[in-house]
Image (cartoon, rainbow, N blue to C red; front, top):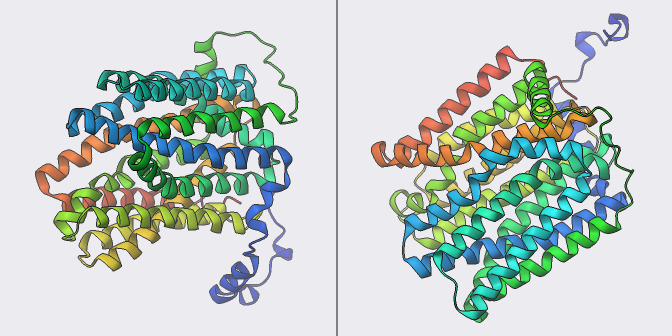
Length: 431
């Protein structure tokens, strides 16, 4: 609906930049940061997931320690990472179809139970002292399959726990708890591994899944209504992809997400080399680089959550897409560790703006009947390009150096962000 010009304030009376910034500051509220927790179902999800994510990061960290201890091979670490990520290419789009055909709660319970069994299997192998590298490879592959089927359902499940006006807040809180677990889980894993061995890290992770499964079982949700018309999985998949491609806003957002995932976040893979070769540091410096970006992401998620039901998501997303590559470009030229950490904190804030708001806007434009398939495409793009990005920036750094590799990726992202801002202005107008 076009607003009546008579109701629009004259140009001279419209608030200036300082006034708008003051209004934004007034809109920030710590109480609003946890609005989604007013929903009983989301409270169950939030606290159980917080516990479970600590376990997930403990297992992930211990698994990589154990792989390296058994093999002494950095290449084998890459094999394990590839094994856990490759199933996304083969199953994630189909998983979106499944997420629209059956209860998403049931699908998440099935995948969480599968992950729990695999965690206890890994713990048993470690306790018995018979674990071999190929065991870890197989378990990583099976965990990748479970993750591929869970991811679309998990993303689409948010709107079954909260109402649409509070969806952005719930997604932001999901991001905040993920980054808290990312920062704390590996540190706890290191202590437990050193004191008690890897088996206890896997055991704690297995136990943590019980909290999520129980929370899902206790939720009081609207009954799942299956699709009345019976069609093939291929037809359903085509319908979802066709909707994404035919919807200008969703297509633009997912295209932007692909560029960010391919060129914007892969620089973090080079942190170990950057810490030593560029900053002249050591393993501690590497940890500080990782932590600074994670703390920035957590701060960005809490900032989005504290805005409550704000109506400028498109502008905040556009700001993030422009600020992130600029900060990374400056980071590439800095050789002083404290300033590097500050720039990474800012890049982490901008990164979470992009990922959280892309997610929220795509779900806003997704009809309930297609949400699983649309989020299947979304997470496929998000996760599917990451292995390619890792290979690309690694090869570029090997040939041209770490600084050039970071600069090239950030420059491509900046050009893409400017093109979207100029040629797709409708994105920044989204509420």
